[in-house]
Image 1 (cartoon, rainbow, N blue to C red):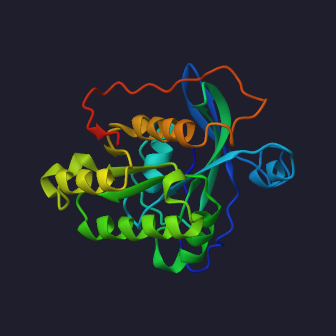
Image 2 (cartoon, one colour; image 1 turned 30 degrees about the vertical axis):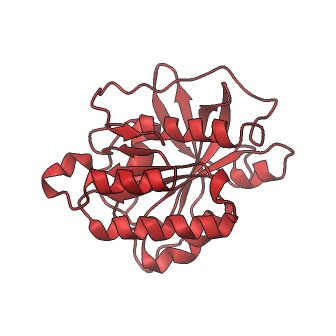
Length: 244
């Protein structure tokens, strides 16, 4: 997999979606796809099928891109590149079958808020991240969650999981797990502590989100093109999660 050069003002914000080909014998291979490809989100929107869109949201630097790449490709990108917006297509399980799912890695930087707000309005399910070593990212997440609720006007039926990322930085923790778990219980939202760097609970976070999709919207995103199940595995047993 190749990596981008650092973002500059001259860089184009337009980025093509990529398809994550997930196989049962190895990690996903990320490939750039053209807008005219049958696998591109724009081409898919022209069809009669309804694809689930998962938005990975949070403020800048909390690890949204790293968590997404770790899930899709079992790899941790060491270089930080502020994201405008990246879109991936992969296969995930919900409703007892595997389906095509679009994962949108949203912008976190202030200068890209227009991209993020568009994604918030168009998303179907949300993986909402903050970093345990950044109390400001925790406050930002709560504001983001409120914004998503306002966009959908349906607080009870928004599939969402809150991810406390960077659990490998425990020595620098600024946000206590108890405070977060109390908040998540109050809004009836599952919570998981994870680390994109080590891989801890990354797969678990996405699995919990698909469980929420199955519980909240079991029919809306179920189509007739379901395929045999493909299952990610998470070998690290150090789980720390709450299902509200």
